[in-house]
Length: 146
Image (cartoon, rainbow, N blue to C red; front, side):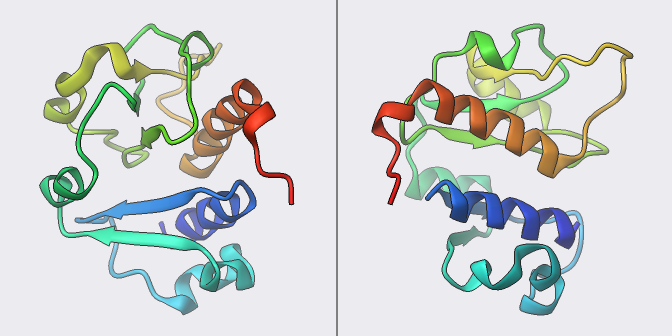
């Protein structure tokens, strides 16, 4: 949903991260109008990059062991992973998650956010926040606090 993308964009701006958006989206195109409400004016200062598909993304950002996949289809909690500056975090649609073929590309990189009541998923923007701030916590000494 565009509101989630705007919220995630604002978070990425606050943490000085690059936001990589891979098509196809679960909605139409991303426009300034759609993200402005949640992303505020930060969207225009954000390092955001769009890709036609996952292969296009991997061609420009070679796959490695620094790629992590947020999914409910694993038992490894996100706080058990060791993150480094420059890691890539993948998040899928709230209703479908990431495709199985993407998860299979690096099973040790699959991480989950535990939920006590077996909810199907959390809000996408909330999930990004949880994992992004854990990565920040682990790497706070190198965080650019300008």
